[in-house]
Amino acid sequence: MTQRRVYLLIAALGLGVMTAVGVLNTPARDGGELREFDWGDDFQVDRSSAVINAIRVTAPFDAGEHRFSYYTGGHAPGIGEPSAAPERVIAEAVHGAATVRLRAFEPYTRQRATEEAAEIARIVSLATTRVWPPSPIAVQVDVHFIPDDAPFSLAKRVDWEEGGPYLIAVFARDAGFGSGTAAHELYHVLAGRWSLGRHAPANRASPNAGLAYEETSADLFASCGRLLATGSLSLDPPKVSGVIAGQRFEGALDSQELAGALDLLSRDVPNVQMLRALFAHTVLADAFGEQQTIVLESPQGERLLARCRESAANPMLLGFRLAEILKTAAAEPEPRALEN
Image 1 (tube, rainbow, N blue to C red):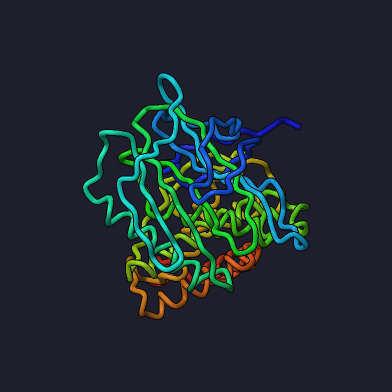
Image 2 (image 1 turned 90 degrees about the vertical axis):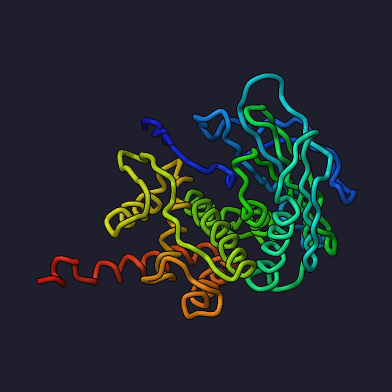
């Protein structure tokens, strides 16, 4: 069989998940050092400034020992010698059981660093208390700002034990910062902890669906965290395009494209990571209805939170949700028919 390659043009690559190997243990609050790390070449990145953040669970949750292990970090191509991770803290914020620190090299500063750290802390704290998981957790996030065009490939290992905090290390360029990245990556850790999505033994027969729906759930988890933290959320079209198995996808999915995307998953066509942004937009658009911006205290806001809780607890339910959306769209008359 000819191997199909996917060529992506993704405007914001901050939310990524990849395969990785090896790194040091991290028992302390800082999680130990971020070390140089080979994340592999699963993603073909066409921009030198692109940053991919990643999580890889390496030891599933042990019910007897109440622990599991994962790697957290990121990588990006660039020019020159590989960069280390910055240690200098430029802002710190705490909200509930979530602690967030922004780190950067001298002399880098950010005008809104304090506000950004506080927003990330609110997103993570509220997502983990009002969306999922079912019991309170402690989270410590380090956001590392890397100089533009500087290459890096860094990660640290976390050996989590019951009662300890979940540690997250994410990376960003100056202009590519996203407040939802930490929550997105945290969801992948939690999915590994509870054996959801691609980590669930029952989903091994459909690995692409498990991965795509876990990625979609991570996007929705971050979106609902932002809705809870800021009180409102806007529906922005997905800035992603690409070709999978001869089918081109660009921007929001119409009903025909959604049907094609679901068919690709059912046939387990490889390299479908880009579909997660499109699926997430489809679920958001369905919750938004006719609105482009929704507020937390509204029917649309409550509907979206219900969708986020549903997918977070079981990402594979997104298959039924997307099929339901497709069925509803197919039953609606075309705009021209309405005019007539």
